[in-house]
Length: 386
Image (cartoon, rainbow, N blue to C red; front, top):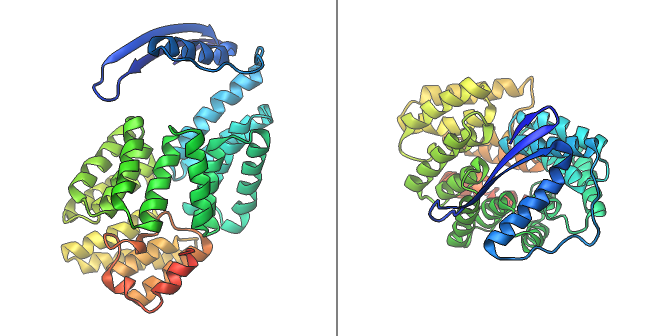
């Protein structure tokens, strides 16, 4: 889409994912205040091309206001920033809070804000005690405005899993969301990676099928590709994982999530040098992020460079004296160095304060045998609701 003043030019293509064949294309030149009407027009054109019928709304929406149009743009921007993770979440929150100011009855704005705030905890931007009520309020308002808001239900799944440690509730929310909107690819990717693979872990093929579906249904989504790549690594399919995380990185090389997923997946392969290089690229973009440092420790151990591995662990511990450092990152580094008592303590604290992006300790691909054999390991699983 291109804009000039209050005019927009929208080029739309309908492409077959299976073979790349262009089924239909058209250009729309409209005023920005017609953006929702253009959405309806595009949907009708695609429906006609596919010879299907879309059910019209029960009531005409009427002409939208300039505030609603601006809110629409801010929601789209906020969602894109949320998908990048890392510090992009700060800008995402600003966009979405502004969207709510402009259009307070927009359920999608509230749902998107809840999704962004949920990630503040996992990526160490705010403590769970501060974020939980904000997330709950945003999602409750979204569902109050639209009881069928599947995106809000998908985020409720993440809240149930990561903040409440209630896997049963998480699966209930995810499955309701995907019944309502099967093509919510980010919800499907989260459900597959975090729910099926990392929490349940008893049907890897089903989890990978769901991840592959999400990545196929939106082949331009770095989010889905990164999740699929990490999932393949968790299932010890390292060669496929390498291809997918590199694809995720190529789709959005400036975003934090593809860089993080790339280092996480590569750190579990035998190619330690490649992981070190991927980490250096990430450092140039996002600084010495503690999660990157945590995964990188394993690669130095694999290389036989224990001095550098110990150096990374010491760096994390030193930073923890004056700043909030992810306990998951400390657990990763401690486990890589064989300091299992320290690793299990950090992992338990990570679950308590909800600052883990992925429970690496549930998968043999990501954690040591010694960690999973530790006497306190069952305590860790119970803390996660398992």
